[in-house]
Length: 263
Image (cartoon, rainbow, N blue to C red; front, side, top):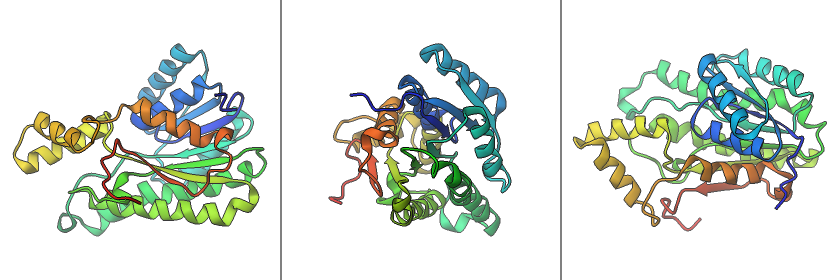
């Protein structure tokens, strides 16, 4: 299937590694022009070079910390300068630290709000004027299956990713008349560095090895394993593409059946 992405301009936030980097790779494979963001300039450049070596597509690395209020607007404007336009925005960021409710201060809550929720708000706000000029604009927010089924010891992520999902659905309703589609993907455990960090914390709290915790998580899926980043990224790429032109307001789990609810 031709997804219709050739020549389209995409900005993928939080893309120096993990899920964001995998999405950028798949978009580039489909012929999109891609800009990527991350906090570590060196790592971001390595990711851009890696995508170039595998796809032949030049990727623009745009370093910046999305939790800082001035960065999202600057990032969007720089991406438009480099790409010439903006058709696709993927909002994503690193996750907040694992913790239980009583372990957290107001300052830690505020940092998580800036990182997960306000970065998304600011990116979308800055992108809207450019998306309104696009022929097939799309916004994809990356949240988590914890929106439907909270994950132990992740109260910050559980709470704020649900807020991002609510924002996504609301904007799908408010801005559908402008032709802009808004969707969210709710991934479950995927083989990324972030997942290893979270599993290590869970293993420590449970008094078991990392490998045992990994085995328990894999067993929670009917498929008996965690996802690979490219499996997630292919779904994300489809949702961003004109091939999904009548899909908006969707909260799609990519979880290998780990979420046990019907809806």
